[in-house]
Image (tube, rainbow, N blue to C red; front, side, top):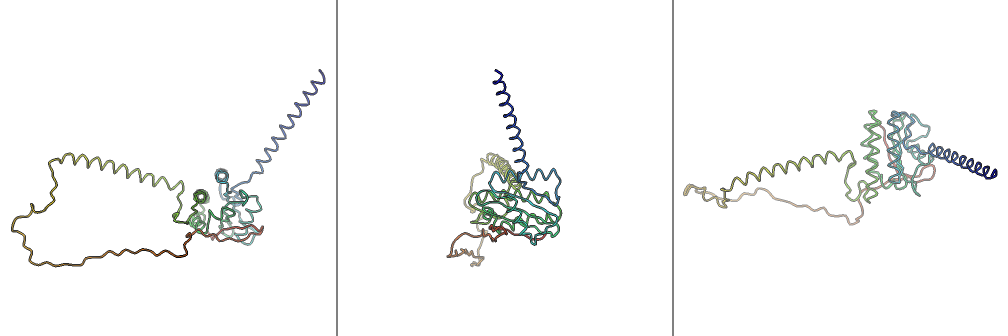
Length: 280
């Protein structure tokens, strides 16, 4: 009986140790989880930083592509391109076997903004797409609206990733220009609803009017409205007014898709990256 109690006690102690050890490993794994907004330049408040980071992490997990923002007050690496590429490569970012992802880099000292892409991110964020994102967020960065710029970047990234997943990356095969993300839909939806209501109300009113005009019959001739002998045509002729010309664009014999080109280079790690940037 005594040996059995000792065995039970030892088993309980072992289970407790394993439980505590597992908890410590879990806490360590959470601590080492990659941050998707690394705001070393302290451009956004802590609450906003947490919100944006969570949104980026969820977006990255959902689409199996890391979407990252990295800011710094100053940097020792010569160019924004190298700083962005190296931070992505050596910080452990990238999903899947091709380490797919996109990173927005902001340097407050040099006023550089750069977008670095890798893996499937090179396809989803081609040169035209990168230029579009920079066109949208650079004025916001220049005016100090960093939260707005980061939110805009995040939403456009989601839209571009979905386009690529559907086989039509931004600017390719007539996929359309401009951002079609969530914050653009309400305006079109409200316009459609307003037009629909106007059509229904106007149609109902016109239908009511036509029901009250049962005594009116169509007249296919204007002869009944002309007084006999009152019209005399003295001169007649023909006058050329206008002409219609239809032009059809000749297709190129080379064929292929339009747009969607991605310029690439090798980073210091040897990885293939796309990207582009400018001053703000």
